[in-house]
Amino acid sequence: MPRILQADVEEVKTRTNIADIVGERVALKSAGVGSLKGLCPFHDEKSPSFHVRPQVGYYHCFGCGASGDVYSFLREMDHVSFTEAVERLAARVGYSLHYEDGGAAPETSGRSRLYAANTAAGEYFRSRLLSPEAESARRFLGERGFDAGAAAHFGVGYAPRGWDNMLKALTAQGFTRDELTAAGLVSAGQRGVYDRFRGRVVWPIRDVTGQTIGFGARKLFDDDQGPKYLNTPETPIYKKAQVLYGLDLAKRDISRGDPRRVVVVEGYTDVMACHLAGVTTAIATCGTAFGPEHIKVLRRVMGDDSAAGEVVFTFDGDEAGQKAALRAFSEDSRFTAQTFVAVAPDGLDPCDMRLQRGDAAVRGLMDAKVPMFEFAIDRKLSGYDLATVEGQVGALRAAAPIVAEIRDELLRPGYERVLARRLGMDPTAVHQQVQRAARGEREQPAQRQVQRDDGADGITRVRLADLPRTPEVALERDALMGVLQYGHRLDQDALTRALSEPFRHPALEAVRDAVASVADRTRVGWATAAADAVREPYRSLAGELLMMPFPARDDEGALASSADLCRRLILRSIEREKQELLGAVQRVPADSDGGRALRMRLRDVDAERLRFAES
View 1 (cartoon, one colour):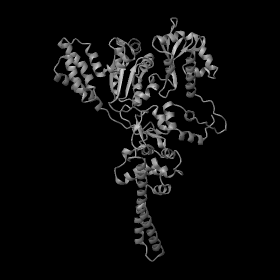
View 2: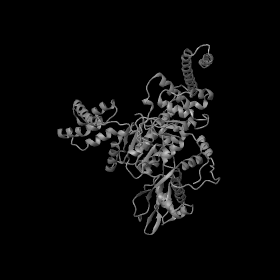
View 3: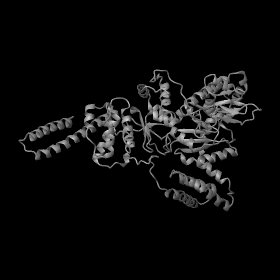
View 4: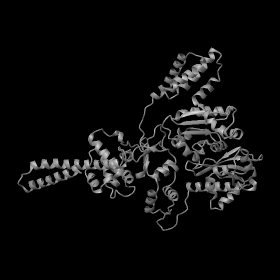
């Protein structure tokens, strides 16, 4: 494949705001001057340690050490090649790329073709929804309260009956059968390759950035021998354990809500009903139970680092719905946000509730939510005869571990009293049982040994936390932080002078050496290139210095502080040279040529010192 011209690679990066790209997947908030932070997308964490600095186009996680520019972010998140990452961003900003052989953009391959195939399939399905054959699909949607506008908003379409209608349409657009098979759009049987979705109403499933990665389809005809709902199979771009239907539409309102609230419903029509009723933060899983990978995705979008957020699960009132709620409760501890359950008294799902009672009833369902712990306690107690002492004791033993799991130390006593009232038992006895359950939960984690994970290469990397806390180290550390973040705006002569002398701490010296080796510290991306050039085991330290929030009130204050830190480095260097000259003067005869040269140099050094001290 022809290589993209380096000038174009740099130009696309310059025109792209890394915060916009990261922000599509991670809820970012201010973390000081010129810095944003959120929950790391590369490892699971409770509090945000992932920082983005838009002005230098760089990200760094202080938890796992992941760092890089906008291209490396896309490559890690979407598993695309470097060329595909550049081409994707170029298309986003409307920039025409040029290649080394002077030719036009080549046909992309791999994952990009899978995205393109799914996009083309989505357009095909939407176009077929207007066909005469799709009357059954339009009737299905209309009976559930969804008009043409609603179908268009959610991209709903129709897969026509027949063996290979979509296959023919997409191969005519240049897609190969191998590409369509890899995308999960067609299947292979004894009669050859055929459309996976036939005679069904189809919902496009999109990732958090809005790219179509798969489909969910409901059967419409009695002679369809397939399952009621059929989804895209696992593909390189569609992983059902990580996909949440409607998240691309809900993410903006999720991240902007006060409190930040996510509503988890059970199906595509429930998501549509909630959004149309005004509950625009509703999402659903795609053919699988709500699990840990879904939680990781949601937490990053929510910015789930405090108990202020809310996750509301809605379930059918039947036994299957109750079991689904308890499965969700088993994952509750993975959220920092408070979790709730909302079940309509008559067991209606949001779609049916909207049909029978209107939009206000769907919105009201959110107000009728109950805390997940209360729901789980009541479900646990329902299995015991509380009219007997034996039943009460058994119920206490079963429910005490649930109360013991409550993280909020202020909430736990309240739930102990709730449990005592439900059981009709002495609150002291309930408290003692909960304490025993809590101690049992805590003993096992205390035996674990925490190990530092520095990656598969076995390198023990040096990080900021490892540096000694001395004035000399603090000066070198803060100066490098300022240079990496604001070096393009500093006086370049003074900056070169400040970096001309080796640093005293070996880790910081490795970073200084890489920074000093950069010929042009005013060009875009110089700091990220310098950080990447630092030798191991100090490269992660450079990333931290580049991403740490600079201790200043505003951008101008940070610039002034960075300039002052460079001045202090220069003064330190001048003072060192002066002390060496004073020692040499004592060893050389005053009237010798060497003595006179040393005194002249000492005079120049004093003048230089005075100049920088007064600047």
